[in-house]
Image (cartoon, rainbow, N blue to C red):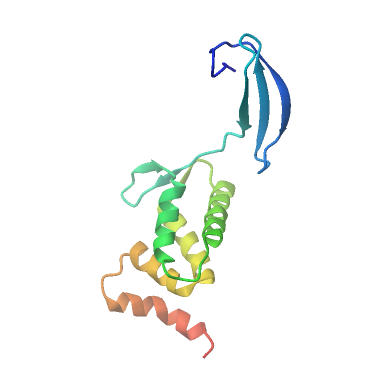
Length: 153
């Protein structure tokens, strides 16, 4: 590890401990040349995956892009940031458990819609209207019909 002050590659670890979130190791180091101290973090390199879009192109998965779409669907709804984060994490974990390197965007969209439907039905319909590219009011009615049949009056 190079010292951020003198750029020397001669240091020693003074202290190591798990970080607050337990997903990293915090190491306190001392440069043996300039004697200054600094902190480094060691983290697991997470597996990344690519999304196969509808047009066949492959792009890196972007958690923020997915979050943005879900936040728009949940705008002015009683859905907390923590619930949105949990939904995204759940979808990510599902993808990492079931796919190696690539996942179809349709699978991602269906996973989000399944979870949104349980979380907030209005947010679900908003997300579905964009994801499934509703053209007119009939598309909304077709999407709502099964939900209306299931819900108690």
